[in-house]
Length: 403
Image (tube, rainbow, N blue to C red; front, top):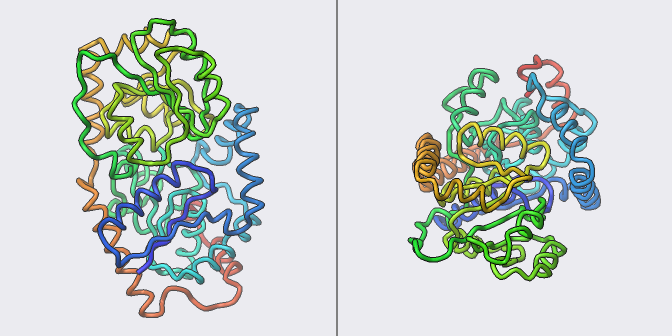
């Protein structure tokens, strides 16, 4: 049996981290299911993927406001209707169909909205029969994700589940609140921290080391109340700039690819200062670490931040304030810490899948279902002009179904 996992782009991202977590979960439990992760953009055209990813990072870095405007007008609109780009969809539907024909998977898992949209098109048109599962990597659903035709939606919270039921009329039984899946390494109990040692604060800026991190730490002074560990990601300039500060209580680390090493780091620290990326926040919530948000990228992270603040799961840092003062006002406030722990527990208690074993059972059951379709010869309708068939079908259905 075979599962095809579809993120987008090659660069490290939450979409890849979630796909890797699912692959690890499956491979630890069975050798009867082959997992294959394919970045649809690179599969379609490697030069295109490189150009788009480079443009994306430069766009966010140099003109974040324009990116945020574009995101809210094309990917997260007020009426939450899908904005169709038929020429682009035609190209990628053809590529995806060729990929499916080549790989012959029994189940497809989408961890990015665009492959999900294309799989929804193929499912609704009747060309593909095998099960498809969406696994969402932010605390909300943008307009790109495929909605109808998807067999299961694994969503991060109850609020998103209710939105999908009430606004998109998706059947409740196909929506399961799982939280954003994290690697099982992060589910291990952490070690008990000493109350007498100097507290450690982890500062992270994502895999690219983004965020105004230098300004956060350079004013901490020679004698700090905390020891800071800064995870620089792939940002070599940030790494060397921190070393140049020569602060005794500040330590710089490069990108950590090992989940076990990252989990050990979480176990060492008492709190984290980071961006509101869905996967990182989910890992830290599972580890029970107070979260301080130093910045948010435009688009997804801004929207994540609003949800997290409303649920009292994170603390936003005032860039004009003193970092140590802000952290101490929370960590040394027993009442506030109790309030935060209660908010985190409330969030976790709403998950509808109690364990990773149950998640594995859900995935393996759908893989078996897909294998039945494949044995019966129903996976793909061997017809010519598959893209034209999809587009012709989509024109027939109403806008509310075309999602």
